[in-house]
Length: 103
Image (tube, rainbow, N blue to C red; front, side, top):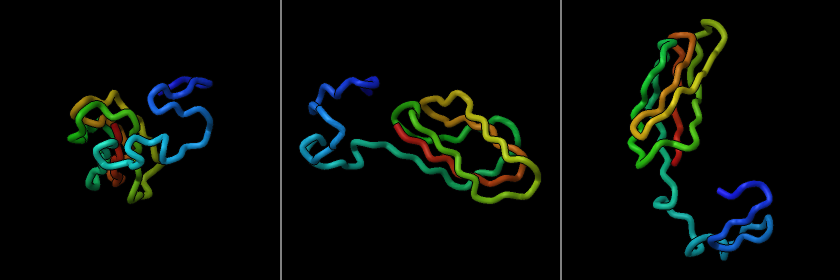
């Protein structure tokens, strides 16, 4: 990913407008992006490993609460994700959530 003020070298994006000419083969296909969405997980207020099945360590992770048990302040802490697991601590216990991860 280019730094601020730098342009992409491949494809030559020279301004802030993205056109089909800037996208490889003028399409974005699932082979270009790897995304994982978990089943519903139940928090236990400890670090939990959620196997993601992606080809590498996720670069973007989103934790989405899906059911609040009303048991206190929601706290989400990401751990160090690996090439096999998303590591996350969700508290309090009993909160239900899903994990979205992308490479």
